[in-house]
Length: 267
Picture 1 (cartoon, rainbow, N blue to C red):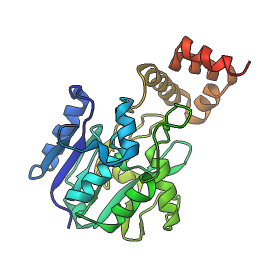
Picture 2: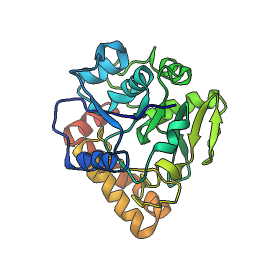
Picture 3: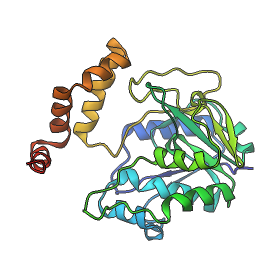
């Protein structure tokens, strides 16, 4: 049985934002008899994995927990949640699993398994051990040319789980002892549109704070969400994929200097 411990990571030393505090308050409300543990650079060994250590050295905090959260749950058992996850009912039913994860479904219909939604496992579960080491043992965050590897963890996790038999379908599945829940359980909010559709099976809502985004990237994403809410995802996606809009987006998100550097590479 999974122990009643909720883990979260907060690296970088900055104060928790109000949105994170509200989410943690929801954990306390619906899981009142759970221990909540914060993990940061003072109580976790960041040198234990090369990928994680490199992400920390570049101060790209959103990627540091990708390995850490798996290792922490493996070492201690319990439930992990990102600090942008709001709990809406008791998690007690989930404790009967040996190892569980959740599906995220995009507006375009793509399916992935996202650890950031929340996952849980018993201490020293072999499934989480294999997943952690197969993905991260030989992975670098800093590429040879000095750029960084910002491949989102859901992509890497899903590709690994597919080798075990996971199907990219939004339904409850069990692959080699890993119980994978459909999107309505942990991801009723759509990343592209920000629309929320909870059901009686919803445990939590992932609010997609996207801490790895710059402030301009977040603003651009919010603009996309608002347009999608007004005219629908397919139409808004068509608009934002038009070449002039894409170019404006690149300049806005990365800044004029960075955009100019990229442009010069093509001349």
